[in-house]
Every structure is written in structure tokens, then in C-alpha cells.
Length: 452
Image (tube, rainbow, N blue to C red; front, side, top):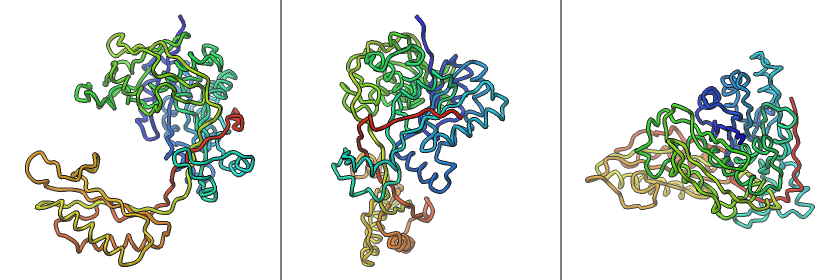
């Protein structure tokens, strides 16, 4: 039975840029897929585009493709990614220039997927009766309407399949849903239909396995991380999928890391919500339907996935301007390191309060006393903690008031002794963008393929 081999070359913007090229050269891939985006990434890219309209995409893709593209062309590996961020066409144009520079113009056909950016359309959607309320808090759209900075729908496989059907060898999307990057090549290769729910579910499972890169090959192995071989040279995942939806998960040949049932299940359970209905733009996948078994050394088989019709709505990841923030950290040493940090926080809070500043909140952690797990009783291996880190973060709607509060931070030099200088540098004020998830009817979001 025919199979398609897809390598997950990137799990996030900032991941190992050498991994995709290695996967192409050593993985015998039909497709390389790369996931660059998260909610916060879209906000960052939108701020970049506001400053310079030629930006707004994940620039790491350029170095990755300059390295990997010659081998991808030689080996016939096609590439699908969502590096386009909020400016897919600009990203595709830069990729086209790289292909030209490498002398690969005739062998490379670059497509951009556009249409997921809804920012300018939101007022009209709201006027036509779309709620756009926050799906997590229930807040009404009008509370943030004049402060929205970006709004992108998670879109599915349709346009990616169309691009591949038209001969694209590189497809660059904006907010393509993470598992869609893998599902679309499978739909194109096998002719799976948009209502082949079980097959689409299998494609989503395959996509979810590889979307976080080396998480599934031991990089996020909670159960037994000590047993992962050669973590400094983690291989990246490969899924080999047949037309019936059977999946074999492996990794870069000869690499470090580990693929077994535990690493696969850990990744499968990552960020899925309701396991009986993992909602994607393409299908509602039933995570309780399939089996996971080891099929050899560093090979796991997944089979039997079932799916149900896709939801009538698409999730929109939006962000809005929500004031300003600043943060810094100090180290306090023994004796009584915890007491020194707590006294410093008391002093800082008093000095800011007496100024009457509009500070929304002062968030703090005394790292070393339960900043991760929430327990405030110092936990030590033996005796007293020799040092702790005081982290202080402040937020305000007023940049001026926050600047005055930041100035007060410097007065901690006259607080309890036993403190280092600011280990994070002088607090820098930055605009804060907060997350606004919402839903729109899918028929109101139209994507399009643009060849460059």
C-alpha cells in the first residue's frame, strides 16, 4: 500500500533551525512541514508589520530554506509551513528570491495562502450579527473593539490542497491550523475527500504528533526524561501514513532522542481539550478511538482513528492592546534570603502605593519557594535556601504611571542588603497585548491561493 512520509521540522518560531535541513537530507521525506505559530507569535508579528509593512512573518524560515531548499529540490521533497504569520505574501516573495538566488527558479513554485486575517473585517462581521464575544470569559466584543491589534482565523486544508493540486512545491500559510500542515499533503496525495471523516481524523492525529517538533521524540518526555538518549542531538519526528490512515511514527535516522509509546501518548494528550471531539477546521477527531502500540525500536504505530463532521465555526485568535507592563528580577542571598526578598517586595509596594499611581497589579514570585507549584513554604534539600530570586512584574493602563513605578524599583538598592544588581537589567516598559479568542461562521472566511 502506498505511503507518504512527512517530517515535522519545526515546533515553534525559534526552534532548531538546523533540524529541517537534516530531516530533508536524511529522512527520505515526501513532505517537510514546519509549524512556526502560537497565539503570542501572531501578536508579535502584527506589531512588527505595523512598524514595517514588508515584515510580519517568521524570518527563521529564510535561513532554514536557504539551507534545505537545494536538497529538497534534489530529493523531490515539498514544503508546507505557516511561517507567513500575518504577511504570507511578503514571506512567499522572500522565499521566491531565495530560490532565484540559489538557481532553483524553474524547480520551485511558491504559493501563499491568504484570507485568514480578519482584523479589517471584524466591524462588518459584528454589524451583520456575528457575536465575536470572548469564548473564555463571555465578554462582549465592544469592550475591546477599538483596541484590537490582530485577528486571525485558524483555517484548514482546503486552500493548501488546492495549491498542491496546482503544482506548488512550497506552500506558505498564515494561521493554518497546526495539524492541517500535515493533513493537507495527505489529502492531496491520497485524494481524501473533505467529508472522509475517519481519514481526516487520522491525518489530524499524524499532524498533532509532529506539530511540536522534538517534543514527541523525547524532548518533552515527562515520564522518564532521564532515559532519553543523547538529548543534545534530538531527532525530529517523521510520520509515514498510508491511504487507510495507518500511521508509523519515527524520527530522524541515526539521531538522539526516543520514540516509544509513552512519548507518543504524551504528545497526543498535549493541548487537546475534549478527547472525544478534538476540534479542528477540518474534522472533529475522536481521540478515544485509535490504538497506539510500539512496532519496533523508535517506531510507534497508530491506527483506527475515527472522526466526525467539522464544526460550523472557525476559531479566531485575536489580541488587543491592554496597557503596559514591565518586569525585573533580583537575587537575594542567605542568611534569611526569603525574608530579604519578602521585605524588598513590601518596601516596593509601599513606595508605589504612596505615589497614588494607577498600577493595575504587582505580580510577584519568590523563585525557589514554590513559584512553579504555588507552595510558599521554602522547600530545600537540606537546611536553609542559600539564595532566591524575587521577580516583580507591574501592569498599568498609564505608561506615565508605570514609568514612575519603574523608577521606584531602583530604590530597592536601599532596601534589604544581600542583593545583586538587576539580573534582568533595568525594567523596560512594553505595550501589553492580551488574548481574545472568539468564533466566526466558517462560510464567512474565504481563503485564497496566491502564487508568487
